[in-house]
Length: 216
Image 1 (cartoon, one colour):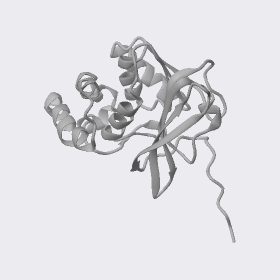
Image 2 (cartoon, helix red, strand yellow):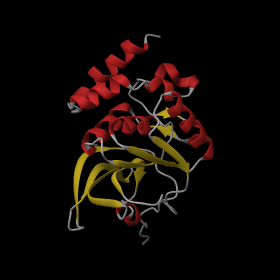
Image 3 (cartoon, rainbow, N blue to C red):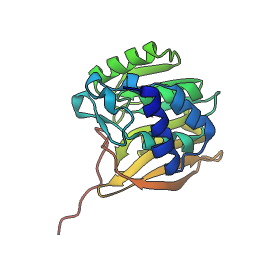
Image 4 (cartoon, rainbow, N blue to C red):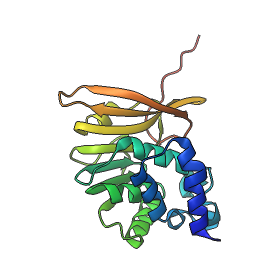
């Protein structure tokens, strides 16, 4: 398979038409080898507009979702980033090329180990993967950027509390069939603002609470 041709088509036919126009993001998608973060069985599907199955019942998000969220976060070289839901390690690799350091947490030990190995192979030395249930525990410290690589019913306050003033958090929020990608920004005064980015649907991050359903 001609991966370079497939990568070009992904960017031009999927990513650009989905309003990802930041040239730095487009260049990054062209540079980071997505196929090296995909299970061997699905390697030929690395650039298709679909979720790709991972071990432990997880999956990679569609490339256009990853790209659109990365664009919204506007990560800078001096910033520290936290990813919740490492999965394949691909988003951590993208963040690693933008940020000073990336801490990525993954609930499944198998996925965490494989992702860390892939990041090392890709030469992404500033991204660390930790096996942790982020719904119960988070890495110490505060972060300039937080991305949830999966959906939640609502953005957890404990996660928001880890944002530095001026920090940004991107998450897919809601329940099927209605979910929205949101960008939350923490102001210098400690308040938060939320902007709806686009409608989509994504698999759940494990452990985070669902919205209680009312029974009549």
